[in-house]
Amino acid sequence: MPRIVAAVCDTDALLFHAGRDRRLGSKAAAFFTACEARNAIVYVPVAVLWEIGLLARQGRIDLGRPLAGFVEDLFSNPAYHPLELSVEQVLLAAEHGPNGDPFDALIIAAARLLDLPLVTGDREIAGSSPVRTLW
Image (tube, rainbow, N blue to C red):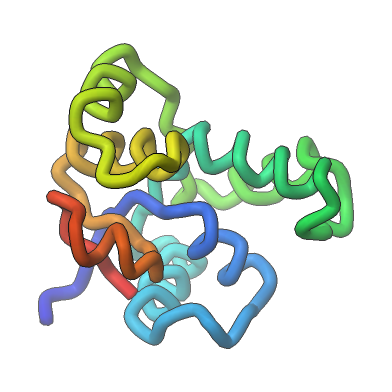
């Protein structure tokens, strides 16, 4: 398999990486290792950051610090790029979302518009989405 030099990440993938969770797939882990070494680029959709904030506020995850600190730490590595929400993403997500999850639809739309793989372990996305996945 060719080395992936850029991808978009899903919420769970980013959280698993940040928390050193063993559930992170081996290919996804290798990709994030390349990002940490600044040999690859990961685009983090703002929808991912919003979902992380909601999960933290609901007490479903513990970031160990406020969301702003998590985001600041994340983007202190130049391999991590925030991906702003665009009207194109919203329109694509509204028309072609694979399931009822609006976050998934926006994240998939981001990967489609950039024509990049999506780092995700979500089987529903991998099985029904028009994007390539990496896990």
